[in-house]
Image (cartoon, rainbow, N blue to C red):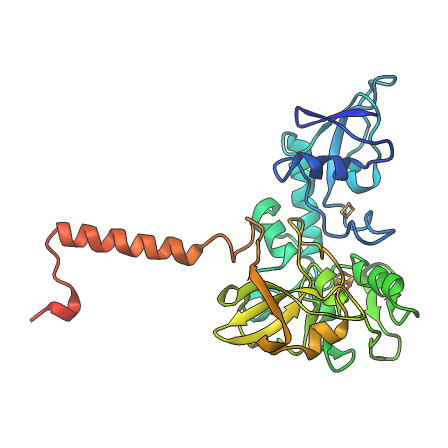
Length: 328
Ligand code: SF4
Ligand code: FES
């Protein structure tokens, strides 16, 4: 089996493994970001260029470095290969450029976008982006389009990753939408604004890395960080019935697939589980969901704020401050 070194750490993987897959086995500190690759869907990857890495040694037989940065999701491991990701300045600079490019047409409407807090582009720009973009022209504008009664398409947020197309192509019996036009005129479209209403079509919401495809039954109900994710299951004849419920108080605000640490669905779920079962009594609750440590939900900003408040109050007390409500 080939052995590859990524950012100084060696790993042996089966032949045919890509650099991205090998890096994911090593863990979060080695894995390049990926906006279009989706391990559960065939033919994904190679569209966004966020996973670029530097191959400093091609293989044991051919130790020359590769002349250009390569997309790690499309490059197979060779025995003796050496790769730099987070340790290479050229890679980090190129990634900054890719983020700038992805943001050329993407509106900065996070405050009103349902995906905020779960948006991979938001995380990517925070971790790898430049402080400012250089694009001076107007962004593309589109009105939101209803593609069925449950899904809304915000074309202006789309980064053309093709994940939703591969999802519908591979999970349903007929192809209902695709990419039309070319270059900066490309658009996701159902051609004549048809609905996407195949049994597993709701999965396009989960695979979309940005807020381009959103769940209309959840829109504007809550910011995601105010909801509590809980794993639950039910007997379902169409899918595994294993889902994540997002509670606000006692109400189930939305149902999604369970996401793994790469923000990919563990198993795709059917539309009945996703859209029709919004009562707690529909489900057998398993317990709180394990959330990626990078997610705003698990970062515990709010817990941190509480700690800060307790500390400040202690300091104020030590300095002899009188709280407002106790002042004469
Ligand atoms: S709508 Fe979302 S999933 Fe589909 S291509 Fe655009 S960004 Fe990707
Ligand atoms: S994840 Fe490799 S090109 Fe998009």
